[in-house]
Length: 112
Image (cartoon, rainbow, N blue to C red; front, side, top):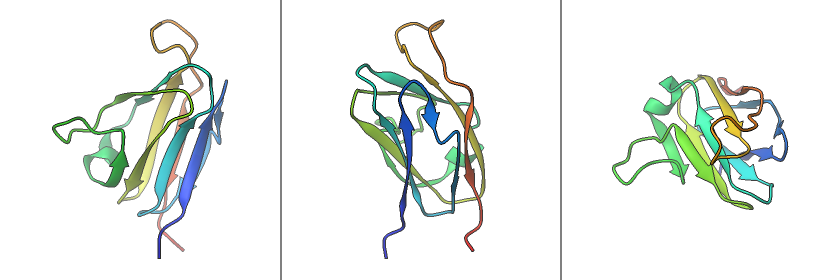
């Protein structure tokens, strides 16, 4: 049985701002904008160990804490333990002082 995929959609805002998942589920960030965005992880503890990733690790297997997502593309992670992952999205990745979304959260809880 394949675990469900939880989708985070990024337009001018992040929807949902708090996403609930359980260990093993894939969380996918999708850029619905017409320009690239930059996803920035603020809490790295949950990223020490992940079950899967698409577009987030470096060539050396390290987790990038800043990931650029091209228009219409997505990146994803599967979390293996419980906890909160806080992140921001920069809507103008080439401008560090550009628009940034309010901090959003992935809340990984035990399955029920």
